Every structure is written in C-alpha cells, then in structure tokens.
Length: 299
Image (tube, rainbow, N blue to C red; front, top):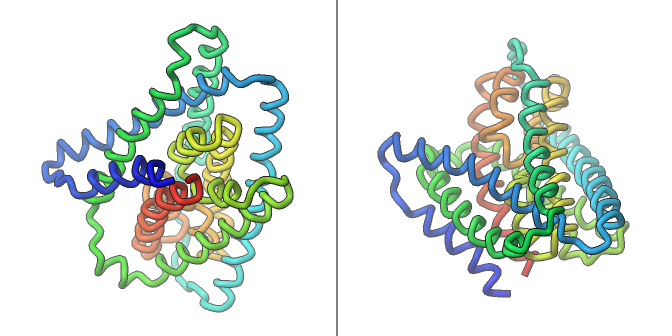
C-alpha cells in the first residue's frame, strides 16, 4: 500500500518544491509535460495489446467507460445544479465569439490515436515491448515530477485560493459528487468500491488516471479510466456554452481538473473574465487532489 502512495506522492512533492524561476525553464517544463502525455498514452496502448482474451476485454473497457461516464456526469450535474440553486452565481457577461469547439474536440481525440498507435505496435508482440509496464512506471514518476514543478511554480498563492470561495466550493462539490458517481457505477458493475472511487478520482485528468490505474488495476481499468476522463473533457467542451447561461457552477464543475488549462479558453469566452479566477482555483485544487486520491484508492 505505502509503496504505491510513495511512487505517486514523492515525485509530486519533490517537483512542487523545485524552484523554476526562469520563464524559459518553465516553458520547457510545460513542453515536456505535453510530450510525456503522449509517451504515457502510447505505452498504455502497448500494454493493452498484451491482454489475454483481447476482444472480450475491449468490450469490457467500453462497458466500464460508459457506466462510469454516465454515473459520474449525472451525479455531478445534479449536485452542481443544487449548488447553483442554493448559491446562485450571477453575472452580466455576454458570451464572446467562442474558439472552435470542433478543433478542440479533435485535439482531444488525437490522444485516442496515440493510444491506438501504441496498441497496433503492441499487436506485433515484439519481445522488447514486454517491458512496457516498467517503462510506464518510470514515465509516471517523471510526469508527476513535472506536474509538481508546474503546480509549485504557478502564480497562485494560498491567499488567492482561500479568497476565491466559488472556485473552492465548486471543486469541493464536484470532487465529492464524482466519488459518489464512481461508487454508484462500481455497485452497478459489481466492482469493488475502491476501484470505483479510484476511477472517479481522475477528475478529467486522463493522462494521469490512465497510467496510474493501469499500474494498479491493469490495462482494462486503466483504459476505461482514460476514456472516461477524455469523454468528460469532450463533453465539457461541447456543453459549457449552453450550461453557462443558466448554471455557471455546472459549466465549471464539469471541466474537472482541466478548468485551469485546456477548457479555460471556453470558460473565459462563455462566462467572462470573472469566471477565470474561479476556474484556475478549481482546476488547481482538483489537480492536487487527483493524484493523492488515486494513490489512496489504488493502494
């Protein structure tokens, strides 16, 4: 149990306290982080190809993905709708011209092609590909080190986080609701509750959830976690402009950890500049919480 926690938390903590003052170095960290996502997803695809009884397992991945996505989405939307009713988030902002949602969706789907490419290579069953699990662990440690450095050198201070009550509130409600949805999905599928909680702890961070859960539960659960979180991001991109008109909390909460980066432009143009601080705080908190919860529930 503790070794799994250590593998995830130690590089994250070490990276968090590494000072990266020069903008060029921070830019390098961000670029390396982007490339590591592709490397990890490629390795995950390779691991998937080594599954026994492949066709049955692919159907299981689809089934798990569908159940978890629907349950987590439904519970999130319900909880955030109730939050909006109790504490309305009002604004006078009018939507700006939105970035191409099709283009953003295609960017996300490109990640699927990386997994497929790894899967196709894995089908060759070359001997050296059997080391994919060791490679994924090394890649995960490096990824978490970079993530820690990125979070530790962000412009957010503790005071800014505490002062932005809406970002904290939506993050708290969304985090708990996702875990509830994961538990419901696990019960429906006959999976252990810890597996359901681990699946729900990705909060849209598909690159991390995919590889962490692959290491802990195997390629089936890991792949389902990846596709579940990727589907969440795609859903957020499509629904934000509609949701933000009537339920700003739902629009933000649906983004999960991606609200501080990938979905931030859509949130800003749909919800206005006053939504940006809450979105950054929301994404920052979930980005810190996701690896910790996945480590706990995967151990």
